[in-house]
Amino acid sequence: MLGTLKHALKVKEIRKKIFFTLLILAVYRLGAQITVPGINISAMEKFGATGLVPLLDTVSGGGLSNYSIFSLGVSPYITAQIVIQLLQMDIVPKFVEWSKQGEVGRRKLNQVTRYLTIVLAFVQSVGITAGFNALSSMKGMHLVAKPDAQTFITLGIIMTGGSMLLTWLGEQITDKGIGNGVSMIIFAGIVARLPQGVYQLVKERIVSSANSSDLWLNILFLVLILIAVLLVTQFTTYVQQANRKVPIQYTRRATSGGSESYLPLKVNVAGVIPVIFASSLVVTPSTILMAFQNSHGGDTWFQVLQNIFSLQTMTGSIVYTVLIVLFTFFYAFVQVNPEKLSENLQKQGAYIPGIWPGKETIKYISGLLMRLSTVGSVFLGLIALLPQLATNIFGLPQSIGLGGTSLLIVVGVAIETNRQIEGLLMKREYVGFIR
Image (cartoon, rainbow, N blue to C red; front, side, top):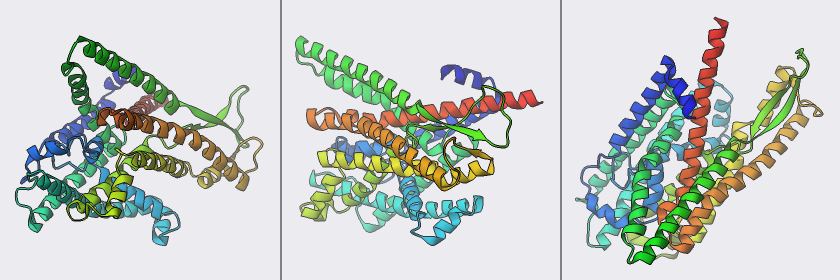
């Protein structure tokens, strides 16, 4: 990866894309430090260890801890994307029609997604502000200096504007920079918080050691965590790059002896998107529930829902893992549509040896995606669940519990970005050869 980056920086066009991406990410990190007006930031320290704050900080790069204009991150936009994609599955006929209209339909769907993002962002911002204000009031503090309807609406508008600005910045990275914009923003937020997380862990384990025996035990604990992280990172990278090569033959192309064509399908076809989707889908109900903390905190329905959507409980961890598994299957078929793939193969005069074109090819590709997604979903679920279970069972810091999710996102985005840079380098070589 470092070699690829070194070669990329020598190419002016790619270098501009990289610097543009870094500039956008710098703007994002700057905005994550700007606190929303009218907020008592010291009150947020009371909730730094609660389940919702670390989870939201994972997708907002610490924006919620600072209660910044980017507190929500790109979570509302991701949730809106999930909803719109689900509605395209023969639920809303208009959306189904637009999905088949190519670029024009894609623009219409993107516009609807943005409108839905505004609604979700406003609801989340008001809900989380009202909820945290209610919790801070119970502890004798006030998160909001003037807790009235006008203040909540104003804060909601500011935080919604911040989320939409961040979404726009992500789109700019996708169009003019390197990598997927939304994923790059989440990646940058996680990486920016790594030094702070390491410092807190070392401070908690080393500085607070009562005697020399505790000190050596804590050092051993940190070494074991480091080894575990390296092993899991290696395993994650290996699985993320693994693929199944489906042989392809052409009826209209004369191939030289020994040459083979194949269709590469990754073992984890969906990539890291299911983890991001699941995180966003857990965040949305949690933020809405925050608004009812003060008035319905003791009700049975509230406690049940809070238990389901909290990663600090066993039930919440299992629900989170199930969402990852479901989204892995769902997004795999979104990424690789068996019907379109079969149709494209027929147009190119290609076929899979031993498989009839048409319905048989669709059936074969669908079955293959199901098997690959089974492996991919189990892999994603285990990596995301095991650290969280370790936190819930052994009382480890919440940052370690969310480490599985963060690791999946960081490794996945790094691999995809590296592939895009390699693709740009290869394209440049081909263009230069043709000229």
